[in-house]
Image 1 (cartoon, rainbow, N blue to C red):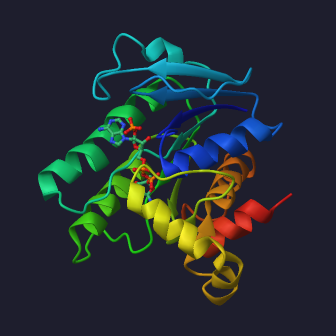
Image 2: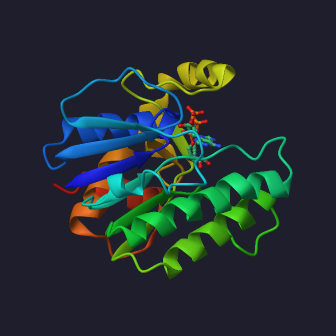
Length: 220
Ligand SMILES: NC(=O)c1ccc[n+]([C@@H]2O[C@H](COP(=O)([O-])OP(=O)(O)OC[C@H]3O[C@@H](n4cnc5c(N)ncnc54)[C@H](OP(=O)(O)O)[C@@H]3O)[C@@H](O)[C@H]2O)c1
């Protein structure tokens, strides 16, 4: 399987990239970033793109890929709805519309637990509208992942400094947290494995909550 990865410099995306590079079912990864990165692998090609709203000059490079793992996203904290929607909805759809035209079969989107198009929280409505719009596009499969708390594993770091302090503090209790709150707690490893699994085998639901992510990740 050949995969296009967006958001591979972020916490979720770093974890997904690690799993893709380790998994023999993933033959090649095209990492789309806005700055150069140092990860090296014979399986990896980088596309550095400044403007994530205009793919005209590079869209040929998206031909012949099977799946897109879309881990790009921002926190809504401190953002107004228009600015949050611009990244969350407009940017995601600008990418997805190009990829579906280029024949990518599977689109996996990282949303979040509590996403609800008609909910009270602004972020939940915008993510919900994004999920709905993606599901209307003619991909063979669209999966929306709604993780709750994600524990970074294997040296994955958040881009937000103080988050890393929180993750380090909670890291020792991660196995217990998982047992106590199976509906809420996952890891970067599990999210990455689940993405590969749903792209290869499909999944009975389009929207995967934390327990579904765990179930998909555990399939052989
Ligand atoms: N972290 C969690 O616990 C958690 C839980 C549930 C859901 N999620 C969701 O997962 C997604 C990723 O979260 P994360 O924690 O991995 O975030 P993160 O560490 O802040 O990474 C964000 C990623 O998005 C890219 N990005 C942000 N704005 C961009 C823009 N305008 N143009 C191009 N690239 C842009 C960043 O690229 P640069 O490196 O170039 O900045 C980076 O690769 C988000 O949608 C988030 O809501 C996260």
